[in-house]
Image (cartoon, rainbow, N blue to C red; front, side, top):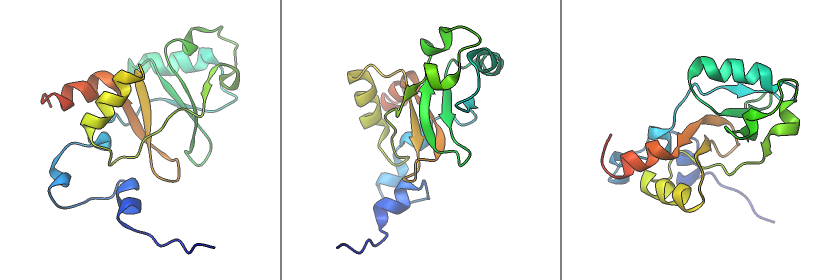
Amino acid sequence: MYDYVDGKVDWLAAGLPSEGRAASKPAAADVARSGVPTCALDDTLGEIRARAGATGVEVCVVVNAANVVLGILREEQLKGPDSQRVDEAMVPGPSTFRPHVPIGEMAHYMAEHELPTTPITTSEGKLMGVLFREDAERVAHGDR
């Protein structure tokens, strides 16, 4: 048996403020875009394309009622028929990252794994934003 005790990593994973040398360096949450479209399992791709098109972003994060990430629809998945349901088209259980991960590490990982986008979540899996690879690479190379 193990008694779990909250600690520094939990604090950082929740996206709460920090101090010290690392606090001044950009992390995933600093660069992630908030306000990216979200959708439910029973939405249709036609509905999502209309919603995503209004924002100019070609990604939609599938979440439940508690805002926990269930899947993701990227440009490829959004090309399906208007009547196709999200649960049939989505990439289930996408890789998610915590808000405190250094942006250089994120840029490297996303390039290595050819990820155009990835959700940034709390340790409970709640969506905080979506990190776009081009944003991560730009900031990692010094262009804020």
